[in-house]
Length: 232
Image (cartoon, rainbow, N blue to C red):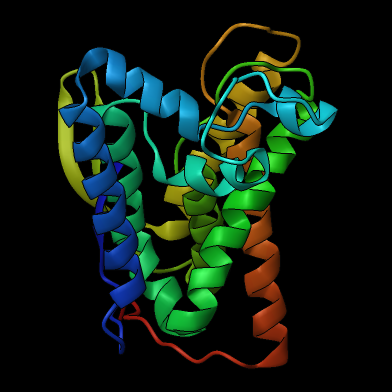
């Protein structure tokens, strides 16, 4: 299943969501302009390396980015076109509604906070990893978790395909995002004990849970009000 758009209206123009998307795209275009070697060099500079943070050492000599800032720089860096395209698609679909209920200022800190917590959740599970971590997935996972808590019944236009069956269907967010989380959890469990490269599955889980907790907290305090179209 690939989500395409939702039917959830907003009141505020999503300045922050669009700004984050534009920033990521501009940085990625800069990466491409550096050529193959420059591209990979840039990714290495901006990435998080768990071992550096858990052992307080620098594995990248003369790296201009301080180690303590890499959890932030890494979330604005991507390893390829499909990587950034998938992340920005999810942020575009779900980010505007979360920004709408949190407000621009809170959403900015929420997004960055989820990304940082997601990174350290991955590091907690793989503290000795020397593999670079990049991407906005952890922060966006937080957005998805928040969306699920606040809008479980919102309808999502989803590209559904199975063998030769392909169709766009409207599916409740609880199913779309629940299925997404199940995939992350399954792959995370499968990756335990593996030392090779791949996706930081636990970062996705950490970000998602963080987003759910934050949104649940705001709901209990009654500090957010937003409505979405319901089925008649």
